[in-house]
Image (cartoon, rainbow, N blue to C red):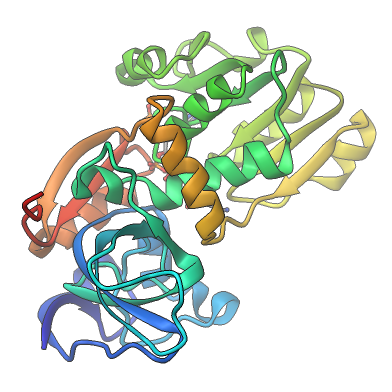
Length: 313
Ligand SMILES: NC(=O)c1ccc[n+]([C@@H]2O[C@H](COP(=O)([O-])OP(=O)(O)OC[C@H]3O[C@@H](n4cnc5c(N)ncnc54)[C@H](OP(=O)(O)O)[C@@H]3O)[C@@H](O)[C@H]2O)c1
């Protein structure tokens, strides 16, 4: 048996129960990971609401948690790269991270960055993969290009700023007054307080926009992109009419687990180019409060759930 945070019905965070459930057994193409830490994403309350049941095939009972850092406990017969005792971090496609154990496919995890402890490593996967896949794979951001990153203080934005700087780009990023210091600390060239300044007054003719906010912020973003540039939307579909009118590209991002991407991100972390911002560490039993915070869309950096003590080196 194992301790886990479980939903037996879809709904608000208070449907979650902290209880004992059977420990999963790995199939031939899976590894069992003993989780040391997990973290919290805005996708957790969305999954819990039932929104992804049709879209991605999530089903009840469900254990939330798309980010994990832990140690491989045992491996299925067809696993070739992972072995018991490996320290890994990753993104199980269907969640399950808010528990003492989870089964993963080999392509969902990679070696944990050596320079991070498990709590720090658990803050990385979904946010950093989303930022990496947007900036490197979709925008193919080049040195000298300019990117506008909305929500630069959040789970995705905080990695996007650092990845953009690591790729030699010029970064304009937005957040509220309380998070202007964090934007600067992450390397932002021009920090915009969206509560005081219209970003359009500062960002003009940019090569790319990363938008995790949507609605009015997205609607106003098309006008700041130069011809041939791109708007990457995390929470909406791009407006085709706006793209055509302005001669720009649009992409709806759908981040996915990818061991090769996680390995590249780990290299950047160990090279000191990017780091996770962990603002709160809570015990697993406080997952409801953590999920309520995630639903506000005003989290600074990441909230991590500690599940077990850091193993002795
Ligand atoms: N499509 C995908 O594959 C994918 C992947 C990951 C995440 N997402 C989505 O992307 C969104 C962001 O994720 P996240 O993990 O970064 O969320 P988060 O950690 O909650 O961060 C959101 C950030 O946005 C800032 N913000 C809120 N309103 C803003 C506004 N009007 N203008 C500029 N910044 C604003 C907040 O800063 P202040 O508190 O300073 O306002 C906060 O730091 C979520 O809706 C999530 O579901 C999508």
